[in-house]
Image (cartoon, rainbow, N blue to C red):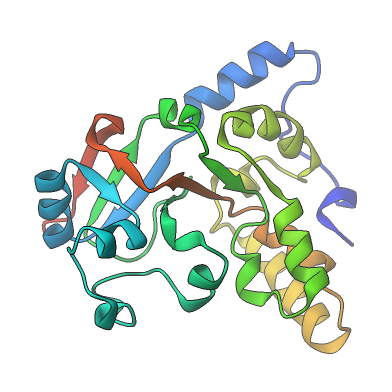
Amino acid sequence: MTIENLQKTNLPNRDKSREMIEKEIQEKLKLYHTTTKEKWEKIQEVGAILSERELVKRGLITTTQLDDFETTSTGHMDREENRDDYVFASHQKENYGDVTLEIDLEALNIPEAKVSTAGEWLMFADTEEAKQYYQDQEIPASQFISYLTEFLQTLPDTEWFWEIKNKEVRDFFGQAMKDRAYNNNDEKFRAYWKLHPEILFPKELPLKYIKQAIIDEQ
């Protein structure tokens, strides 16, 4: 059983025009980048969220700090795949950091911005075929909303994308993990990660694209 052949509910109305569906997605879609209060202060000083590579290039962090999660959340595999030159964002708020920055959707039109529709699959890509699958799932960020008009219709319920933490998604993830561990089958596992696309902005994301900063004062 994959996402595609589960009983579908709460889907986009197929009687609506594509234009109307895209408009509804634009109204619902949010983009977030999570950080800390200390980093948010530095971001405001610099005038942009910088990629890890850009931070090193400008002397704001050193190469000896790259393995320190408090300094950078970019991983070794990201560096191997040249993803360290991107600023990452998600359509869901993350569970770390005390500052959540909401990004204007206009940022999707930044040249060379892209979306990994395979989500964080790269972390599990241990073969050349798996890496090729990841690369094949990348699209220009400017096509993201158009992509979603098609992708959401493949889900049993569109809320699987908008509300990742619901029970059905957790159950599906459990099935995916079992298939991966016991049956050497990654079909569901790949489908699960497509619910977590990564939005990547090259080098830096200027402050003009930050709609608001949501600060956790606790």
